[in-house]
Length: 346
Ligand code: DP6
Image (cartoon, rainbow, N blue to C red; front, side):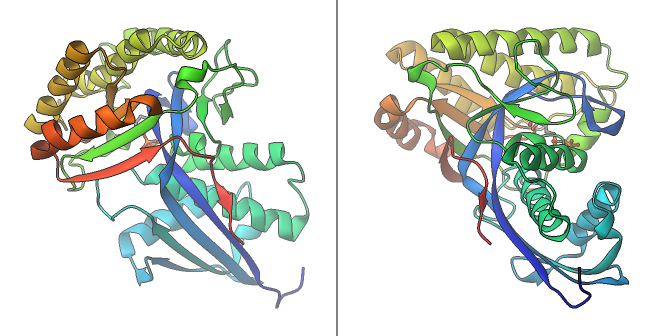
C-alpha cells in the first residue's frame, strides 16, 4: 500500500422486513432468538467510501444526501471504532463516507439495516483492495454480515437476497448467531416471490429506539416464553415456505408482529408505538382476507407503519384494496418487493 493511493468502494444495500422478529439480544449483538426476513428491492441505501493517506491520523468526513449530519456522523464514527478490531486499516487515514437512501428521509422506514449493510460491504471491498483478502463471495458476504450485525442486528440479514435467516437454528444450514445465512430450502413457487406494500402511518422519528426496546427484554417477565415462541415460529414459517401454506404463513407473520408490540406494552416501563390508524389498517386487512379469501397479511416493524405482504398473483386486488379502503389511514405509500440483494456499483 502506498500513502498516496486512494481507495474507493460503492455499494447499494436494501432494507429488509422481518417475518419472524429479532427482539432481545445478549451481549455483543447476539440475538436471543433466530429471525427470518425478506430482503427488499426498492428501499435501499447507497454508500460510497473513500480512503486516502492511510498512515495519517484517523479523520472522518461523513455526508448524508450531500450534507453534513452531526447525529449520523457520530453513529458512523462509533460503528467504525467498533469495527477497527476487524479492519486494522481503519485506525488511521482520511475517510470520506457519503450515503443516501432511495426512500424519503424520515419516511419511517427502518434505515439502519440498509445503511449498516452498505457500509459493511463497502469496507469489505476496501479490505479486499488493500489486503487482497475476502477472495470468495462466501467469505466476503459472511464478513459483511458479521460486521453489519455488530452495527445493527437486523442489518446482518440485508447482505443476502431473498429469504434470509439469522441466528442458530437446526433447520438452517450454516446458521449462526454471528451472521445471517440465505435460506437454502426449496421454497414453494407460490411464495417464491412476495410483495411488501409499505404503508407509512407516521413518518416521525420513533419515541423509543429498537435498541432501547431490545434492552427491555433483558428482565422481561415473558422473556423465556418469547424465546420459545420465536423458535417455534421460525421453524413453522420455514415449513410454510416449503409447503406454500399461506394461511398458516399469515398466522405466524401476524402473530410475530403483534407479539413484539405486546412485549413493548408489557415491558417496564411500558410503551407502545402503534397508532389508531395502524389498528384501523390491520383490522381491515383481516376483514378483507376473510371476505375475499385472498392471500394477504401484514407485519409491523418497531413502529406504527404497516407492511402488507402478498404474492404477486393477487397484486391487482390488493393494490385496489389499499387505494380504496386503506388510503385514509396512511400518509405515504412505498411499494416494495423481494429483491436481489446488495449491488456493488464501484
Ligand atoms: C423490530 O436491528 O434495529 O425490526 O441491533 O439495536 O440496531 P439493533 O436493533 P435493530 O432491531 C430490529 C428490530 C425489528 C425486528 C427485526 O428486524 O428482526
